[in-house]
Image (tube, protein in one colour):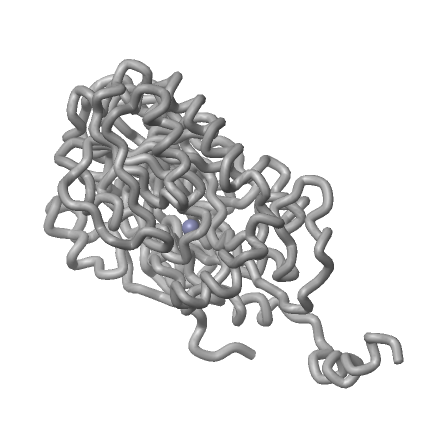
Length: 420
Ligand SMILES: [Zn+2]
């Protein structure tokens, strides 16, 4: 009997294509709370091979990945409740070397060569290699003159080292974690004051929307649960009180109070980058006390479709204390919106940051995007300037006489209580 027969009954029960199914199956992004609908479903045996990711066939188990509409983080909840023992039994088992043949030896050597070159001036710094695996990388670094490298691996050498470290290295770790925020917070617990983190991470390619789960790096058999973009890494950093230094393949996380050594190391790795999303406040009263004029900035919380949002109630809305104080800083500000009071209203908005007044660049997703570089310390806030507000009553004779501007989402995204 062909494989399809048993499914016919199942298909009959699911007839009816509707976008509500995707909404019902969406999650809130683990990093930014954004709307993360289904993105692709990949067989568990798919592994990280650029040439033949199904060389070992199909497992017949599908692993669902979702992608955030805001920070573009891709993640699966497939592994969320797995224990260390289950990972050891089903992913990092005796077969792992078959699906990642360079894991044990070749890659630690090439990573060490690259890092030793970049960090040649800081051979004396005390390093913790977080997620060290077998310890091959530390050995390679020692061979290159780095005298103080300590290993720690939550899986393979789980005894936690004493003391704090000026530099934490972390290779091929964060894509394996089901909770990147908890993972980075654990790293921070080992970090000396003002220390920094250097880690590797391939980022999603520009055509990811087209190739989706076919991208070689989305490999559930390798245990890849978290797939990043620059914005996702920036949000991961800011969630942990750190700032991303964006490189090519090596990236860094540093704190505002980074030591001179950390600043130099981070500068050798990448450039400071921040993605900032201007959300509507969940609780408008808690937003208000920072500036008296914010009291009247927002209308009440509403829900429309699958989104919670607030209409703006002022043509000038400020977000205070939101910028990292590191320069020069490459900054991307996004203002998501679900509605505008008149066509073209959103496109006429401007953002004021550090004395610069920015106009939005066109964005296919319909949000407002502003990009700039901040070269020097300035007022630590962002102001959204909108055209003059108008009411549905004045515009179209509706009963609603509230002055409205943009309808901006409230985060985290929450699924609708009922779907039809
Ligand atoms: Zn997100």
